[in-house]
Image (cartoon, rainbow, N blue to C red; front, top):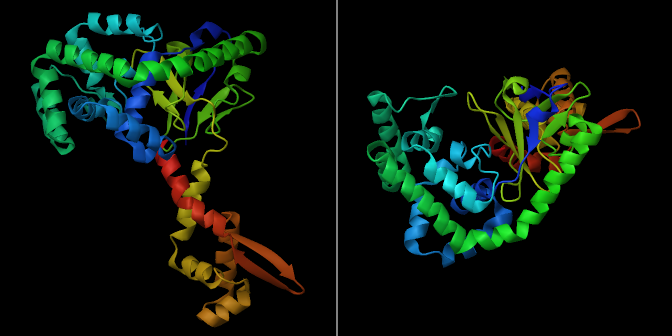
Length: 356
């Protein structure tokens, strides 16, 4: 099951589109510390990292837990308000109470069973430090600073963000901001004229909007979100492509970052997992091997590999349903061929599904 939510029928104001320089900077940071996941940005990341001072690059790595798979609240939720201009967003971060800022920054490490731990609990803090050791000495120092001197940690993070802005991101933002704001204006106009369903259509090939207003985001995890009660904020991102990121934090609006412009395709989670399941059967791998180079009938496969013909036929049927084999009738026989392109995309599609 994907992440799903129902669009509110009579509360259009509960759904908004927003642009945030802070959110986009966080995505650029995400790319810099994980360029292997964004091959289309590899050259950009190598150039930026090569031009950064060593101490700034080290700080980006040390604090990178805030922009990995789970995002720190202060870098994901534009209702903080991060949807304002850069200076206003920085000022808002500086004015946050240090304890609140620390909890928001450490959220990616505090998530246990989908819920955030309490920094007031000494056991939670001790476990947090223990778990962080696997991330390296820099991350441990960063977490300890938040736990022992939250005000100093807050100043350090805001300073890091300001240094990133001046070092490389201000120029990037000047180039992409007009397109992002144009996207938000267009979606907002569509919402006002054609309704929410029309406004959310085409955000990403990994998102589907049903006739009934049910939105499904094709991810591995399964949950249903109460958008009508909490509100929904949709944020387009250039640097976040091809990810669809969902921020689900109790007491706050649901926030969805969607890729802009949308990619041409997204791996189908159900189809990818079905293909993995089909190929997990050893006999089916033997059948695939039999037709990997040349087409063969079920009878020929059974005879050459000493398999039961009925079983071979069933395996071929399962492979066909999964789109891994194609059939061609030749006279009284049916010959089967391996869909090599489908086999080749399984690995890439699996990565797409897992990283989405």
